[in-house]
Picture 1 (tube, rainbow, N blue to C red):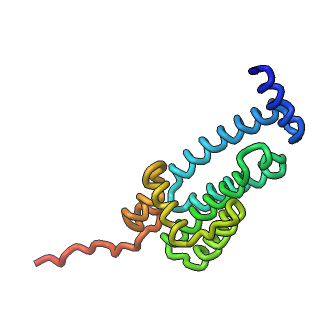
Picture 2: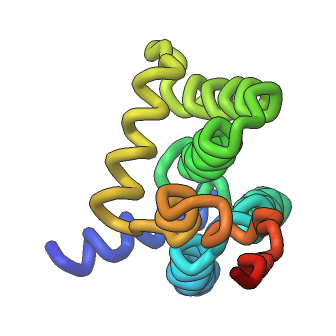
Length: 168
């Protein structure tokens, strides 16, 4: 029975055009990338978030070019893109860039619709989901910097020089 199950699995992989080695390579690479990128997102300051998430989106493009979309769960690359775009949207909203928020939230919603065509995701639900994920799992530094004020976020305030009081 076990032998039949292994042969059936191997047959399915061959029909799909995927060797067990290719699938294992994909899973290992994606796992390593995921750990690295989540760590980078967690450590990213306000001035680094956009580039880190854009690098993650570039990785998703690379996975697709390699044909790895068909090796994992259906829609996993679009789900990854949706999460990155939603995080970019939330970041831009928090930094007051409403136009960029709209662009990235629109992209996020499009990617999530590709994953589940029968579901109609909303801005509010997507925003809340990202807020929950970040608060529970990642706690990114950029959020702490924004809560702490502009100086902590890398924007330096102009401070008037202290002038000594005139002598009595």
